[in-house]
Image (tube, rainbow over all chains, first blue to last red; front, top):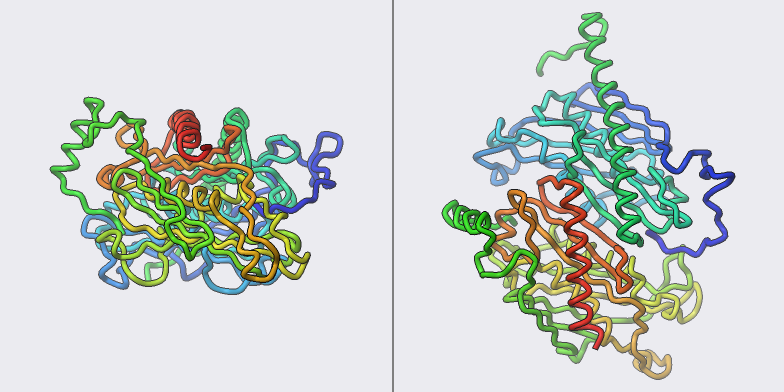
Amino acid sequence: MIAMDKTDISFFKDGLRLDGRRADELRPVKIEVGILERADGSCYIEMGGNKVIAAVYGPREVHPRHLQEVTRAIVRYRYNMASFSVEERKRPGPDRRSYELSKVSREALEPVILTSFFPRSVIDVFVEVLQADAGTRTAGINAAAVALADAGIPMKSMISSCAAGKVADTIVLDPMKEEDNFGQADLPIAMTPNGNITLMQMDGSLSPDQFHEAVEMAMRGAREIYELQRKALVDKYSQMVAEPGKVEVHASD
Amino acid sequence: MTNVISEIKKDFIYNLLIKGERIDGRSFDQYREISIERNVIQKAEGSALVKLGSSQVLVGVKMQPGEPFQDSPNRGVIITNAELVPLASPNFEPGPPNEVGIELARVVDRGVRESKAVDLEALCIEPGKKVWIVFIDVHILDDCGNILDAASLGAIAALLCTKVPASRFGLGEDYFLPIRDIPIATTGIEFSDVLMFDPSVDEEAIANTRLTVITTASGNICGMQKSGTGMLKPEQVYRIIDIACEKAREIREKFLEA
């Protein structure tokens, strides 16, 4: 959290947030499945001002080969921000933040991927942040989980991700940019629909009680997102079944 | 980077664990012996050698004047870096930091930054032009498990004895770096439903889930990081936090509030 002294910012007006949301309300979410032609699975997600694309390639051959595992597939995850995705141009290429986010995001998804089905192979997940507005890692994970399902990768369950934050001593769901920059805490989580946590990070300051409240709120948010992910996938595939030929089905190339 | 552990040893650890025991005889929430030696490097502005059992981590703090960030013109800058040098473990390789090293440095940094331990405003020399840059460099010397807690402890211990080298840069008398809080990182691992703290290197190798909780002197949480490819139930998270707060208080009182 960038510590900036903008104590004059008021985060609430008539009990509502800067963008008119209630404290426990998500920003609008839009999910589209299978938007890329070449990838084995893909997903475009908008969560508030975030616009993120995820693509999945694999299971495929591992390069370099010394990385391959004899008992399971390895999972790679690359989180990348477009230089134009933020207010001030970001220098292209990975930085320390994106290395860390790639690691924790991969670890958020790997627990549900049945990697033992595909020994000596790799499942590559590429996440491109096209526009950032606080919460890009959670948006990336949500898109990646849908893209994995779209690629037909066997998974034990879906993964849904959402953050809770603290602004003006109030716990809020899904903080937007202003709340993230000038807020007091940020707690992103990812979990399975039955509440097993696969990602948890926190910065800022929370008392143990506030932490409980924030975790529970973030988990409720993740459950809401799960329903949207599920619907997006069901919509795409039920359309394929109902109108064969209408939706392009790619023969394996 | 992953530690290899034999199936026999894994079984051995597991069989002990279901009896409620650990390989080195500790209880599940017991830390190994901690020692902190300060000012071990005279060339550094502040330094600390932390031993956590056999794990050894050396943290050095260097300071120099430099330009502030544009969005915080009157604040000093903290830069944290970690070197997982190959002498510390058969699993460390030479070369630029990999994701494990980067994650470690960023979690150490998170503790110092989010606890507001360093009074950054006090490090402003000339608003918008010149501020003090604080380099926290973590050097892992011997990885016998839980180097993250050791590194965090080393960072705050080194900062607590850091002297701002003002005279060297013609900026007046040297003075101690103002420190306002003492963040402590505490790491718990989960393995077949058992939670263990301060994991040894073998315990780290069998557990695939780790949760680090950083707490401030007031008992608030200022940073967290889950790591590894496992899952945690909310109750396990809450339990880790309870124990983490208690352990952090003990460590803070015993070693840093002297």
